Image: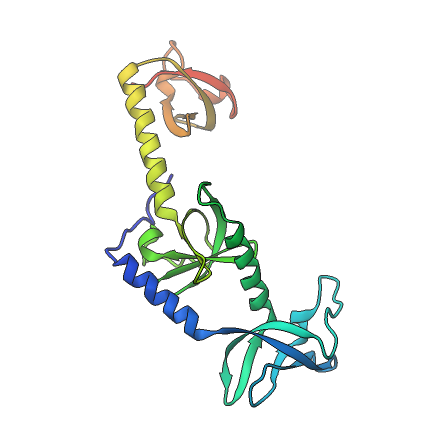
Length: 252
């Protein structure tokens, strides 16, 4: 594993997370609205959300995968008010759907189980990052990200561990740091055992180069130098092995 992008910041996690929740809670409201008009020519839907002015939204938001409109005039739909343009509210049905999906995930979350997620970093804010997994948005604080401020992480695919679920606030916190540190500990344990026991172990060749081959032993890659492959002395490893072959090795 490469650790060039690792940088742990000294941040008050509790205070930072609470501030993030406050900003999230105040920035948008989940409400029910009534479809007032559907304008296919302008690709627009008008929704009454109980405010002074009606809200406008792209018609694409209420179309299914086949392009069919899912609602009719008079139907009630959930929307999130994301802000205002003057006195006219800006709304999003897609965001309401994401919230509903996240609420369902949180409801089914089992505290006794370990959840490792694979997602993409889609947003960055002062407190941390948003990691999206199949439409669900999870929060990863900077202090739990192991991501340097020198790089742009947007679009980066990562693995992370769910470390906190707040049912009242409807939020999920994940940690990349926890997984990286766990992998480092496991790798060090393997190295210590290999060096201590000097035992012959079975490994899998992951990569062959001109100077040797990299062998995976229990999830850790070790280099077998080309001078250590044959009792004849330095040899070209590709003449003896191919990637994926199993070999017996010993730590030296």
